[in-house]
Figure 1 (cartoon, each protein chain N blue to C red):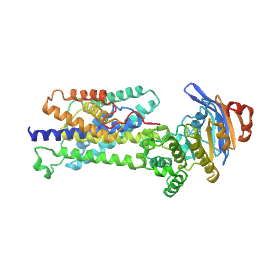
Figure 2 (cartoon, rainbow over the protein chains, first blue to last red; figure 1 turned 90 degrees about the vertical axis):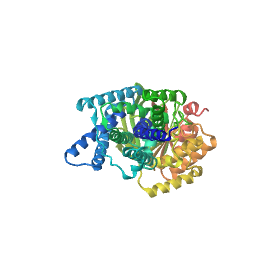
Figure 3 (cartoon, helix red, strand yellow; figure 1 turned 45 degrees about the horizontal axis):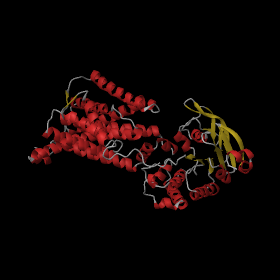
Figure 4 (cartoon, rainbow over the protein chains, first blue to last red; figure 1 turned 180 degrees about the vertical axis):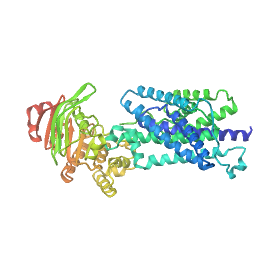
Length: 302
Length: 235
């Protein structure tokens, strides 16, 4: 067995997994709180990438260059995407909060199609090149054949975001309100929690995280189009379900497992069926472990 | 302190409250008794803004509150211990209590109140790091009452606190309700199916039937009222 090859596939899987994780976190947080699969979440990721590309274009035109441009672009993209997430919830989901769940799900799919086609019309249907502004870290030179600078940035960012969200949810007042709302929304209200604000915050956090993922993967891959959110979104959804939807560590674990599985499968078996394999995986989870790796059983005692 | 004037509340097209009028004065323990489905819980949920009334007026300390959102109503000083306790199962006992103090910012006062509820229910102190869902029914009810006390409410609403609990636990909890009322001056509005128990602790009582108040009197009088004895006391 060729160890170098194995190691490359391992790191490739880690990269995919980290990106899935950044998207899956938003899926799982929103699901945890309002039990909605926000199918438009992948579109937020795509919008993040587009926003960053526009900001980079403007800043480059203004004579800026280097990593600072990427950092500014990423921050703007996160803010912009957060505004999208906030608005989307108010328009497409809040009015349906008391409606049957299927209505909200259809609304989510409609939102997803709307955002895709809106970007296609407002921007372009073609692939656009995305500049790589991540510096060549000197310390990576010896490992250059395994790992690219963009990959290191992706790992580090995912780890920091994950740790940050975990701390936020565990220790802050808003985090406690989020957990309480997820477990019993009405009771949280009876204790004075402004549930609308909690839900908005969840969308804002999830959207900003997804946008960050969009910027990073665009830098890594080097091109974007209006359709990238769809597949990434669905894959992240698979990852969230695999890990146990509603659970933050589950989303990360599920993402890594999916990333590695895809990477090794394409590396050792066939790259033609990569996506089919991800969905086969979803079907198998749904059959054998519907609550996911770290998911909770339907409900404990009341 | 609390006034309900001609409250009509609906669930969709089904009318649950048909013109409820009642009043709770500062420092009182008032009970609302009635059969299953009479609208007792709906009355509490209407007061708290979870199921806002379609018409009528709810005033708290002279000010109308029926169009405020649930969280604003809590901020006025009304807290509810709902039916079935509704403990957050995956939050620890301590976190559940923290949630009770969600709207408060006085760290010192919160700490003092935490010590106070641990004094009232020492078992909660022992279990403070355990998830709420792993507590027994009685412990959960103690936690539910304590969580509401952490909000330091002026008016505490209780929905069937005796439901499904062992008699000894019920006795303990009602003893503490009396203490809360007498020592802290917290006003209590108590919904109960166990009329006997409720009338023993309350000053006044209302009888709710099919969404309407049919009787209102002092607890002592209700205790000996023929109709009440037959319908609710099983005598």
